[in-house]
Amino acid sequence: MTENGPVVELDEARARGLLSGQSLGRLVERIGEITEVFPVNYWSDGHRIVFRTAPGTKLVGTVAAKEIIFEIDEVTEDTAWSVVARCSARVLDKGEEQEYAEQLDLKPLVPTVKQVFVELSVDSLSGRFFNLDDEPEAEPETIA
Image 1 (cartoon, rainbow, N blue to C red):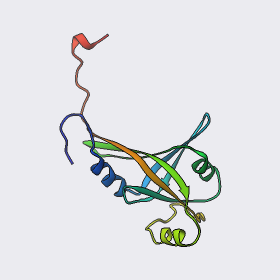
Image 2 (image 1 turned 90 degrees about the vertical axis):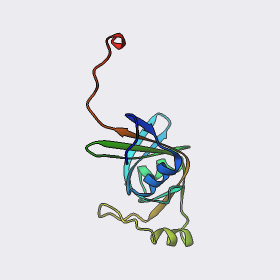
Image 3 (image 1 turned 180 degrees about the horizontal axis):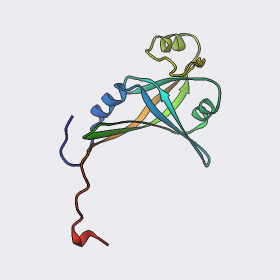
């Protein structure tokens, strides 16, 4: 993927494609003055993000937060990109919803029991693509 300019804003379709093509992201929750960041493996179709968890801080924060931020990125030698999703969250009901989620390609990364499935609905999405290179020299009139 190549784009013009050092920083290019991704269109929504490309951002959704990147979101659905990855499996590891960062879940950001804010409750009052406390912000928590958790790495999570996930499944996504670009509109929804599903991850597994266990009872604890991550689950409590996901349920209590008014808004969840989910971020993914990738850096190569010459390029990088980042996608940020603003989401609302809900715990999937046991029964049909959980049975459906269990069919997704979603296994815990660490050997722990995680039987709670959480679905994030993507409310808005933004992304940027970066062409990496050496920093150019500043023009003399731009130096303060």
